[in-house]
Image (tube, rainbow over all chains, first blue to last red; front, side, top):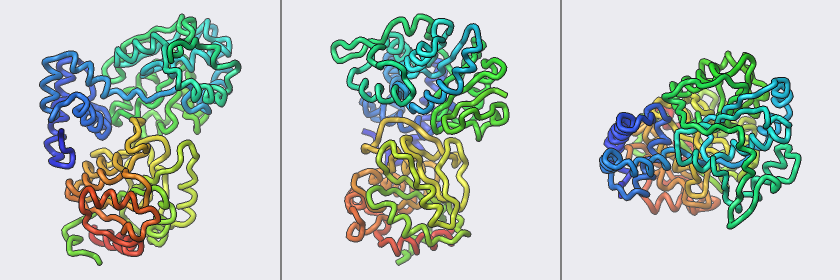
Length: 277
Length: 197
């Protein structure tokens, strides 16, 4: 096992080489991710994948795509829940939905949708507001395994109690259990919620804008980026959003330290809901 | 008490970790610092989950230094007390800015003291002084070891004085700190470290 108390410089060199190797070999670009978190996750992956050094991991990643797939699961952070930060969804429902209702059709982009919890939350909210049928939702992520899980819509039953509490605080209008079928310790979500959802492999680091949208939600994704990559992502959102379109971020994210600070106005600042100027 | 080692250290930043009993301990060492104090002080204090933190207000009331919650991508300013917000890990990047993350809990904590200290040790190297105070779990022991390995200075509150000795004792057991001090001595050292800058 690697002793991370020793020789920090060599570890940083190995880390840079690994990130470069991944980029050249697999076109996944982690070069502008926030360094501290990437380092932690790679060191964690080393232990899980039984490698004694990052160099050893790099060799395995280069010669064995399955190892890369395994590493990717550690590099992406799937911490998420349904109706996470319920007051955000309440603000979305009360202060953004009235504007969305004025459009004959809607396009919504969930950027970095991970395993889909945010997506299903949004779809439920839109259904309750009568908007789901005229919406197209793009759910994008860089991790194919996460996208596959999102597509299936099967979540652990033991989380439903916490999600139900979130849903109610978020202004939910029905019983949360109306939206899923419980079986074998799992909750299978109503397939019709995803009828108008397009799941796509999309990287905020390397891909471009693919549609004009009315609402972009990208929550707790850009905290893993450095400032340059955050700028790029905000640029994509700004370009994708229609005139006066809406942007929702995570509860501790802000655009205050970016060059886009003046190109959005805060609609509900505590809930990180912004509107394109 | 100020050891000869101080002269080897030019300290650029201070990190402090604490949990149970931490508010009282922090107020004791931080509230007497003068408004002209120059070093940034970055703190992880464990709090119960989902409780909206009034920490900033409490400490701003008692301290003459500006007190802020550390924001993602914010550059670290001199002479400021930063607290990690609830629910996110706080790290320091090589460019001396903050970053937040929702990675899994470390030692049952998010924010975790280990996460802050490991990243701060990477970013500041021997220019970092780490303090671990009263607390009821093992978070911070590993982080303190990282600070020492990177050449920084480590100071643990005397477990005999600490309200809950578990956290300082765990750090002492893992790797001997540079100093084991009382809160009064820690306050005096904070003042001394500024003049070593």
